[in-house]
Image (cartoon, rainbow, N blue to C red; front, side):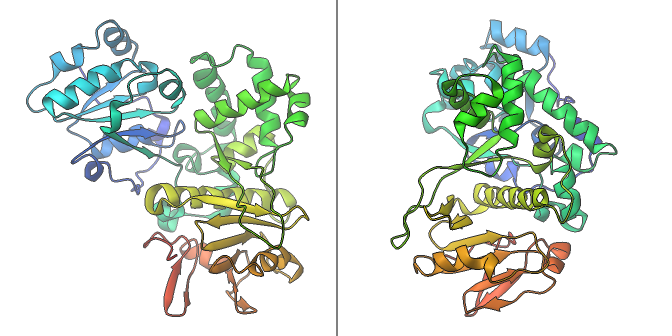
Length: 408
């Protein structure tokens, strides 16, 4: 059985983009799980950075059948030169992890185990290697990775999946992506049998993007029971298509809500599922801008800082979009002119004096400070580097300029 780098990824049509994840450095001393939604560039990155690795692609039928019959073939085929092994789409054969465990222990082999879904691994009671492998996540492209190829309006229109961001027909590719997800993740893995109902749910869920979800309304739209909707949301989370943003509940003057919000992993996928484009100067563009910011913050958290993300909403209707750790609040406004009225929620949270920084990310042409606590990140900054670095008491705040972690 001959092993070679896989050619299954559609990312081969994309130009090479240097990713923040450095697989060679990560794998020097430890094995890793690498999870990420389809077409985020996992296979493309492996092919370019792990050229000497032995690769088993479980989407290759012959390899899948061979290893499903005899997992021990991996050990039999290893040579003394094989110190690094990649198993792509590991969720298709979870029982291979027993053989992986054995080879780590007996031969010191390092493994990179990739997948677009952690559902079967988490729910199947399989061997998760008992701490012998760490976990990383692969996200769509960030502005740091794109550099001078980043364009905010292009990112919101197309999303940041590599093959779609650079596509010559992004809308067609986005629509195909939704179908690919339904076919390969839902049908192939058998996580639900009622595909028409799940398809209706997926569109309804897309219109709930960035909101506190009314599960009863979604159940009515999908024509399924409310309990089934809870299960469907778990499917989206397990297949890495949806992020849950928990509520920050540490305010004292104003009672906070406890319900989470949910964001899809890519703004272009949201656009395709909703069946509409996000045009500037529309309410939909503001929602898309916020979803894009969520992606950047989540990527920064996963790749660099490790800090949790949350949001704040009071029972009286004040809401701040994002809170980083326990130190920074961020309000997002896709406006060229932000008024004091727009800042009421951020100012209300600042009155609690529980955080160090209160920021507004907007489209104004120049950065400014309001009442000593609010920073506005300028539109020109988006063109050049994504977000500005703004000095505050001789401390440079990187939000997130990727130069270093946000200083708490």
